Image: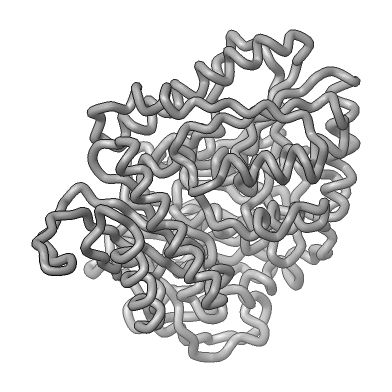
Length: 513
């Protein structure tokens, strides 16, 4: 990556750290996230044009609070501290921070004292997103106040001569109305970056790198039909052709007619080596009687590994394993990426056992989902795959609350197919982050014809989001909801009620389990 200008982000555990990296890349500037205690020598070798210190759950005055080396400020590289990153800089330059008398969480009005440097072109008054419980009582020497709010007299500060800036609010979230402009100013006006991070260059470099790494050896790829594994498969196919073998495992928990679509697209359209395994009965047997969502995930993951491993052994010349790991998977699943709490394990990271003795190829591990979609289009994947909404690794198992049976899978597949079909017909599919059906573990009384019924409930979940980290429930038209509900109840045997989930993330998650 040495040919690109780069911004380095040091992670102190903020839930928004990934979002900072995404925002930087949206400006066609490459960015990576390193843990706050990343070795100084490696930071120097990375040669960033600027450094951003993320927020985090700690307070600087706590015992064992994460800190940075003083050497960082002597690199003469522009620095931007956000929230806890601001505390780091204030503490480093001998300012003072105490616990705030009143925690500030949510919207605030930022009033600028200086509309230049990092705030050039920013409105004198604008809405920002606060999330902090600490308070600066003494500014460091040579720092000046650039902006304030009603509750925070030091909402934005800076040592302009050293190109060091600090913000109490989060410019990376969409709630901060001019946050992108602030980050853009830091990247281009303060750090003098060039917008030279190009996806087309990434594709060429990756194909060349795969050829060099594999040296005409065989590569295996677990193909699910989702965006990530599909892009990986086609990238590697373009690099090494028939030396790639894809293995598709039908666990019975996929969307309606999914196995047929995967076989048609990859075997027929792209002429790939594709092994398709029907393992529905094996998975159902292992899941019988299981209702706990985390146990479902582990059972499905373990069973997949067992099946994949058995199939992989038949291809004795294989030396490499390709996975569709994305950058958020790496950040969330590997604890050394900073003090962030791990919410759940990702099925792509650390998945297959070491005893397989295969070397990993993860060509997408430095990319975000939107970048992967762009690559998919550029290398010729059909739009129906490139624009697929996220689908959980364990499949419909985490969209069926309670026990998983063949009948309950059938009900959900049919209901989900109706839902997605109607949303596509209404031209809303690409505008939604996710839209899917959930089969609940409760039954309700209804009237079907002249008879009393006691049947299943389907919940509809549709959300809008820019990044999946926060999401709002989608305000679908009543007429569309009416059509979806009517079709599901009339066409899917075993359902007599449809409800709509109107909760946002946070506090809810997007998936139900």
